[in-house]
Length: 194
Image 1 (cartoon, helix red, strand yellow):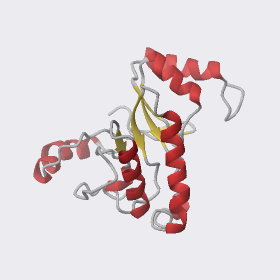
Image 2 (cartoon, one colour; image 1 turned 120 degrees about the horizontal axis):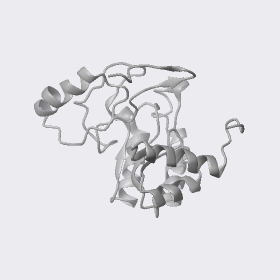
Image 3 (cartoon, helix red, strand yellow; image 1 turned 135 degrees about the vertical axis):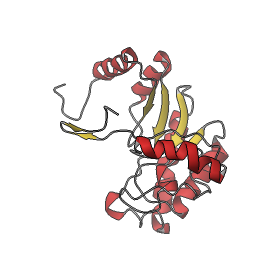
Image 4 (cartoon, one colour; image 1 turned 135 degrees about the horizontal axis):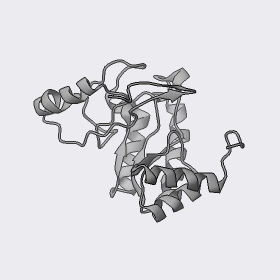
């Protein structure tokens, strides 16, 4: 690609065709809703999509999610995504964003989505990660915010512990689907051999 951050429609098609060739079957539109063309192609190619709201705030992780002055802006972003993309059969779930804390604003977003579209799941990793950074997930935090357990970068040991010990102990029946399994920036990427 020579367009920098801008990709052509042909490049989007090439990317999705390559994903299908290598047996990928799902996309999370991290970290914002994508071009409509991607959803059209996902519908055509049979890819599952989790559509993610443009809500991310690393610098103010535990502030924006609690601050009422941001609630209207957060709701606007979620509503625009859901209303625009609701008729795409490829979309199986909605994401409340990425790494933006978890508090009352997220609970409000979750409630709005479930009231508008109860046919799809809602996911948000922050609902079971109470602190910023790579602190351990607190899977015993139950409540609104996510219909699935969707951690980022769990080790194989953590996944095994979840399945064999934690989920049975807390009677957790929600699906466990990693929302991110590897992080690569530039030419760095680890733990893929596992």
